[in-house]
Length: 416
Ligand SMILES: Nc1ncnc2c1ncn2[C@@H]1O[C@H](COP(=O)(O)OP(=O)(O)OP(=O)(O)O)[C@@H](O)[C@H]1O
Ligand SMILES: [Mg+2]
Image (cartoon, rainbow, N blue to C red; front, side, top):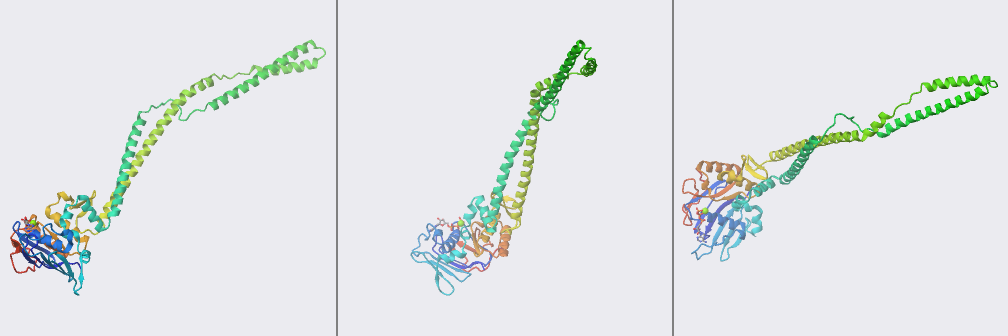
């Protein structure tokens, strides 16, 4: 059960002479009055009484008073908190009559509930941080945002490389009159060597023919003695002549030309291959860019899911780009009353044991907004003690010259 203020009694603190209030247990208790009458002094006194010396006003004692300040607050958990005497010493008594101290108060009093301006004046990122930490997704969201930034920067760099690769590839020359693959010189040389080998064989055959011709001549001289040998030699000569007659030497001119052209052609082929590689490169980087876009979208969806699957202190509250938003508006675009509503909701979640919140300057809300705010506070079971420059019916109590004007103790919220 969250702790609330049952009653408070203040004397001689700041502008206050004597004020007694019994705020309603939930919803708004509006402290009204004209300017400079002591309204904010009431809130400052509560903060000092419950929050400890760091909330002590710089001039706590009412000027002109010979009696030191007296503060007494009864809390809904039965604790009685007092400051009194020359040094305004703190005295905390529990329902059993035992003495206690500031430490016990700190367990259920939220510093933000006492010092709402601290939250309201925090920068946009700090506000978002507070919200994210209460709903328990801060670390995960920051991790997603870190990854998002990383992927985004990565994609940006890849995109730039892809662009320049594409540009580079488009500016490279291309030759249509050459084969797709590099020509091998060794193959042509081998063909040449084969031809030369065959030509060698031809040369050998020609020599053989010559030899037989010589033998024929010798055989002519020894015709009589070697009739048989002559015929044989004649036959051989005939055969050899026929064989030699049909021989045709192949030309290596074409190959020689090709060998000479090889370097030229290969240069063109290399250029073509480089262009293809550059185009391939550009395509790869384009694909990478598309993949990174997909993961960026995925991370953004995870962020969206993270924030939309948790219970938020207030409907339509969210965090965008590390800043708090309400109904899609960032803090500086929220109306003053929306800011108060958001702040109260967040402060409420921050320490659920603390059942109240102090709100200064509620005059920025019109009566309708004030009523709907009061209803929301009641729904939430949250007690708000607020000040408002007004002496209208919406006020639960009017402060005038440091006194509660209605001397009777207020027991209802009093918003109309
Ligand atoms: N210790 C003090 N003794 C006497 N007067 C003081 C003391 N401290 C502040 N004041 C005076 O109290 C007045 C402000 O009091 P307080 O802020 O409570 O008024 P308020 O009703 O909230 O005014 P506003 O409507 O302008 O917010 C100022 O005039 C200030 O000079
Ligand atoms: Mg004030």
